[in-house]
Image (cartoon, rainbow, N blue to C red):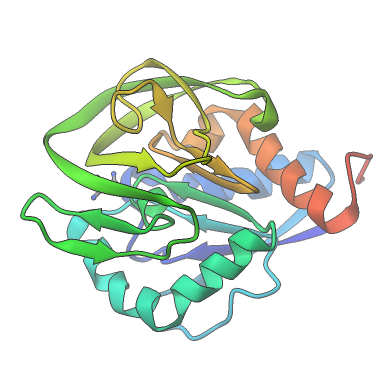
Length: 223
Ligand code: GLN
């Protein structure tokens, strides 16, 4: 059984080894009998996101995120909104997570308009959140304890009715209010680098099985 995976902006959003998350999807996918086929879609590449089962976006610095804003405005934002609405599995890490929201306001008050795929916004804080990040996913995302590390100035505030991915047990997470990340339909966002999936194989399985469930129908042996 095959899953088509889009690694979006791998040349820009790839902080702290986040590309390892894609390697995990392939490696753990194989163990589950899933053939995860990865396409790298870079800035300026007009390839459509339609038809992908998983879209992965890694972390990035403000300067890299700024480079992506025109393309988000031009067409990628609409594609990400459509993918989210259509239940495509999306995983965004830190800067890639922020990009799934409405906007990111940098420390100097500049507003980077993002995709609006999920209703939340991010505002940079003077003190960066840096260190170990541990959180427990809610049951809908497997209920697993996740460990990684965080390094972000952005503080994310979720919109009404938008659930965090889990609750923080160590570190800052979204903004210090105890929530970490986001889960909206099949969109997953987290501040956890690590990379998070190689360090937390159970979460990797949840991501893969969410995509398999949408494509081939609920849990069954896919080997
Ligand atoms: N530039 C964003 C911030 O500082 C994201 C950083 C990251 O991806 N690690 O919040």
